[in-house]
Image (cartoon, rainbow, N blue to C red; front, side, top):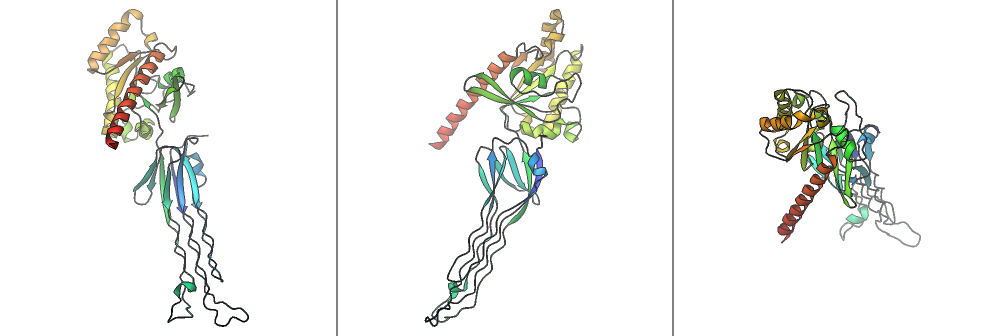
Length: 349
């Protein structure tokens, strides 16, 4: 199924049923009085987060979701049946906005997260509700209220612990294939990745993390050039960014540095918060650099970048250094999780 990360749908809650105008009419029971029942409430529309879904493609075809209308009331004080609520499954990580106002309604951040997006109409009242000591034969009823209707804009942000960043052909997809069972397209030309890929990296039983690979960034991406900027939102939930750099792309360190800085500039223009995310430098394709030049080239590149964070050297095509990098990521993510648990525990006291 083709990956789709944006969609627009219309949701319509059910109208409330109308109240009934009725009087009791039975043999040998004179002056039976009013017995019109209330209508039923209209069904509401809810959206539910589901891990089993990973794309919004289904919403490109089904665009209208309507809950059931409440039934009208009837005589003998019978209340109409309420309309069934409608539950719409969506991928975990979906942001739901009101398309007309841009208001963020909610975020389906976990499995089973449920959110009301359109409230059903209230029931109408039957004439039995309006009887009193001074009005024995009321002919007043109310109609059901219309259900809420909304146009929703859906935006999917994939859930991943680690995001891959870099220029086209830096080897991001090859690295993802080396450390997980994901099989993104790999070829010797740029822009082989056309949409995000997720891969689960298993270190050992019950210890794993998720990596997201997005299309490469080029100059002008923040203004819409290329494909990467469209998918940068998928890195918003990641905790660590891996910046992959092709050390064999040029013999000139200045050219490689310009490419790295260009990616960082696009990141800053897109989101200051994302640009401040923890980032590790991964020097890829070391197998294509002559062994006698490798140490000098890598050190020169790190110095030219003024890099002070973690640095790793890998050859993604052969897997050299990839497992060591994956283990370091797992260890660091475990530390982050422990610190988060401690902060939550303190906040709950």
